[in-house]
Image (tube, rainbow, N blue to C red; front, side, top):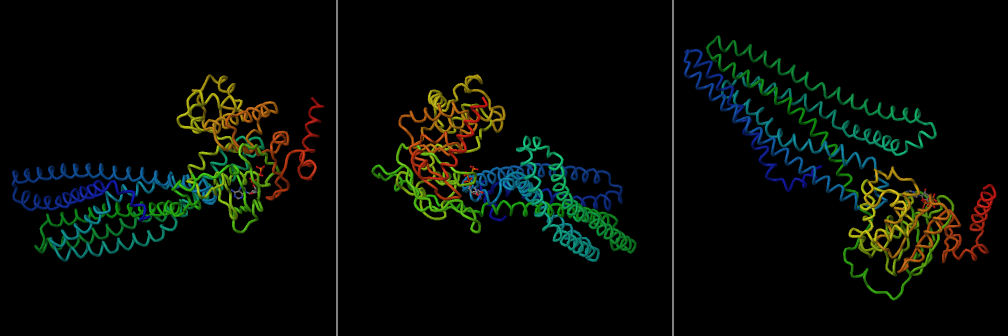
Length: 581
Ligand SMILES: Nc1ncnc2c1ncn2[C@@H]1O[C@H](COP(=O)(O)OP(=O)(O)OP(=O)(O)O)[C@@H](O)[C@H]1O
């Protein structure tokens, strides 16, 4: 958590002025009981009305000065906390963006969202409250005690006893609560995970009539969260009654001792009232301090969760110097896999092994294989979404690890399996491919992607896409994501099963348009359909993470059993469908 405080560096002035003005406010407050004592002992006792009025004016002055100091302190503390929150959020977001898929998979998106939102808010309010109360409350508590000592030594010992007892109560309750706050945030992660999965998968859940089961699972998770929250809440709720008991006993003891001292003439009535006021101030401040400690502890628990994310460093070792990556190699293969192995976890089986092949410049290569055979894993290695466990992946003759990440990814147009679009206009979405793309360039890409009619049908590039592209069909989304990748005119175009929602005719037209591009990119088409890849220059057949065959359609039909099986099963099906039609 301490390391996060670096994000306050641009708010040093505010972080200093906030607590200082709070101290000033506290100092004014500490003077009030003394003035009241004077009004009682001198003004009321001697019936000196002008003196009473003068003192009342001083009280009003102290009140106004205290209020002004408090407002200024709140302003600076809020400014520092909001600024801290903004910079920390920015820093965390930036850090997460730099992580590879492997770390993001390992952490999980739900917990990252909780850490970016709920944890972040908690840390921000912790900083705000700390700046306002961390100095003020102890200052009032010890200031009141010192003031009590200046009034009467024996009575002041009551203060010392009360403060020691109160500190013990606060300490015990806090040590009980702190570990539980972390647990609460963990349970919150689970609830968020379920919420997220249910909201994104709502159609599937309804299609399978699983609403009741999902509701049940959610209720169980929510119940667990509530139980931990209630348990912590009950312990934390002990704080106020216990502190009130201690303080009220101390007040009774104080009034008793004070009354005895007044009757023996050792203390004035005004002094007893002042001591009583100091005791009340201590009570108020200790309650604030206890709340501060609760908030700070929650913030520390949340801050540590954020810190944990910062501690996860990216496994992608990125080079910043582009000298090596820009060296000229004469007509190297566009892509080369050398003895590549990829294992997602150290213990589990490898998703890919013994991958050895080259893809020439401008070649169109199909990648086919059963479900889970490693097709997506293979193409993810090219833009370095994941790093190989063993071997090398080369682009234009250079190991992908030797490229600055941006240079490498600039070369590649990636169309992922899931067509993801963002809230915004079609134009904004397509400009993700190339920031300064003109409408003409966008329309060229749309034409190649067979998406021009989609855009025209929606009234043009200013059509507003809803979150996750919900107002578009699956096929429309796919065409737009293909166009987005084409806008940047990539050297390498990867279509990861991204034409699955297109009908055969559109799929064929798309392949034809891509083949006609000038300059012609190197194209990798991942597909489950033989019809989509059979005309490729080369086809790589994967089986259980290994290469089962490489060659053209004709070669593979003679040499690769797996390819023959896939081909025959699909063509029989398509023939049957044709007959039915
Ligand atoms: N992020 C990941 N973490 C752990 N294992 C993964 C991850 N992604 C894929 N795998 C595993 O790697 C293997 C290959 O998966 P991959 O997605 O590459 O297959 P695929 O051929 O593209 O499948 P499909 O055609 O169904 O999309 C599978 O066993 C899968 O469970």
